[in-house]
Amino acid sequence: MSTPRRPLIAGNWKMNGLRADGESLASDLTDLMKNETDAVFDMVVCPPFTLIAAVADALAGSAIALGAQDCHPAEKGAHTGDVSAAMLADLGCDFVIAGHSERRTNHFESDAAVQAKAAAVQAQGMAAIICIGETEEQRDGAMTFDVVKSQLAGSVPKPSTAANTVIAYEPVWAIGTGRTPSTDEVQEVHALIRTELTAALGAEESAGIRVLYGGSMKPENARDLLALEDVDGGLIGGASLTAENFWAIAQSCV
Image (tube, rainbow, N blue to C red):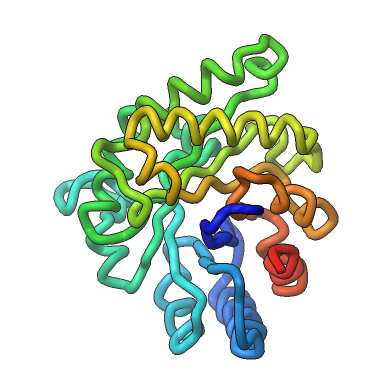
């Protein structure tokens, strides 16, 4: 990455881990970060809701930020089983993922729903990691650019800033499959995202917004992906579940 934007390495633990697992993983990462005297990257972990409090304790005093995987757009109310952005902020979260492809697909979340969640996150002083990306069918149909433009326009609140917004490009067909686009394909989409953000938010804010790659980044391909001009970090799924792999990806920023 050849820009002044500081890389962000974000771990999405998805629906994995019991209390002991989460505490152990967070503690291992905390120890690794404490030995990193001059880190050139930022790191955040997003455990499932049940582990947020325990992970917060394990991360205490470290430079690793805490995040969550989703939230409800309302601050409170009759929403059984949901968690608000205010509740997550109260637990010490700094980031919340909005619109992950699994939420869009499995829970039928629209761009408007994602935008409402992102706005709720921003209103609580946290940063929203807003996910966008095309399916395999859309990629094969040469619709990638149209999908990315449409999802950006519909999912990013206005105004958004570099301080409260992160974009994660997730080619849906690459998540959990071991497949990844070529580096040229990744850079092409990330450059488009930057162009669209500039048009929507202005050049100054766009220049500071980090755009993460979120499709099967792992230690073996992280260095090549993170070296791309418009890739500012990664939203890591499976590889974030072991400290060794997650840390190896972070070290690829060096």
